Length: 185
Image 1 (tube, rainbow, N blue to C red):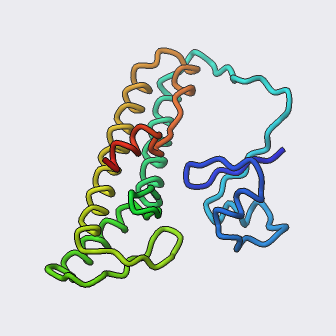
Image 2: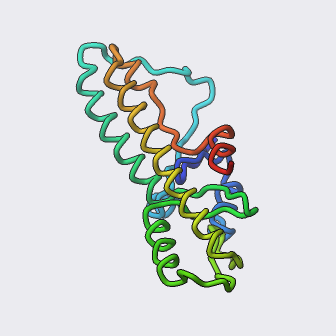
Image 3: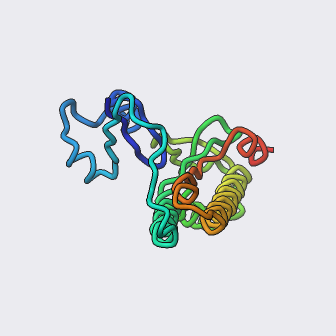
């Protein structure tokens, strides 16, 4: 059975992956084309062991690779982050989104008129200038939260004593429910 990993999220079926692309992926698209779109296709082997034993003679070599993977995963998240807002829609929360929001804040400074803002699903939302400032705070808080997670993952990798411990560190930058509630408070 295939699984698909895109933007640090795992999809158990092609149907679920396709929904994240707003249905624009054609049926029958091959794995190479999916890879070119940033989708990692994983063949899941049934009855496979849940852990893989790595040679213990060189955990430092694996540590270097895992730290590079961490950096890549972090950069990918920062480029493609999407978060919930208290306004009832999701927003892009990557570095580009922060730059765009900062530009809108400069452009509309002092306005009392509605500002048209494109959410993460490319739907136009009418918001106030104060809402836009709140969106910037959410993006900045999400970036700081993800950065703190990156350092926690790095510390776990560096403290791991065996290759298996190094490989067992997983990278998930998505906010959990508690963190989302804190950001929206």
